Image 1: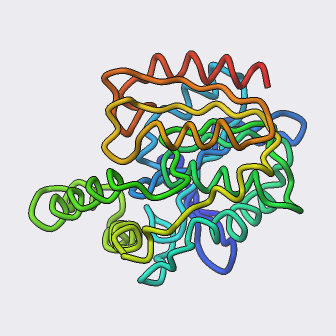
Image 2 (image 1 turned 30 degrees about the vertical axis):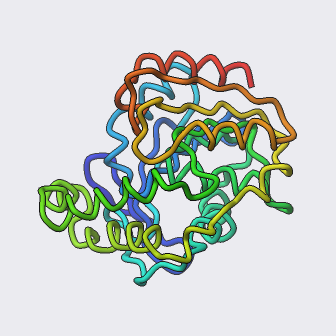
Length: 261
């Protein structure tokens, strides 16, 4: 393992994965495992994991998937079922590597979809609960419009330079892997709704009411389909990043949920 400023590199699933931990990953106590968004990485969570871990007295694991941050690059184009593959292949190997069997998935956007898929899979170690922020369970028109806007900002604006600060040589992997998949005409049919009835663990879903990538239809689909208990937090004057835009509200509600689950 090597690292700087808290970041470490380990070999998992045949490649190098960047991660950092908050406190010791004690097998006897719950670990918050953070799953980042489609343009995110370990560093882009900033200090939100530290604050949530402190509020819940849990340890935390934050990692960058292949193609993000300082993890190894991914192969482009990503397959359209890349989130399903992350849930079925990489996440279980990450949990096994760190010996984590008692955990809560704290997730955002693409990461939230991965969390839902994982919790709906059979034969995996079940999480205690899920915190899903701005989750996607199917493709909406608003999602496509938001992703088209992001493409314009990347190619003609300053989004690329902003992402380069966090992803470096992985910037094209991070952006194209996400953007090209979502803008594929075939992705219009993408859905993970079939996984939802298999989810029996408690869920807290958090959604900004001004999210440019998804509507409350996503939250409603989860609520009516899952087998376990369901809570939601709907945030006014909040877009696609609840943990960043409404941090105090999210920390309060998420910490209460985690401590009760």
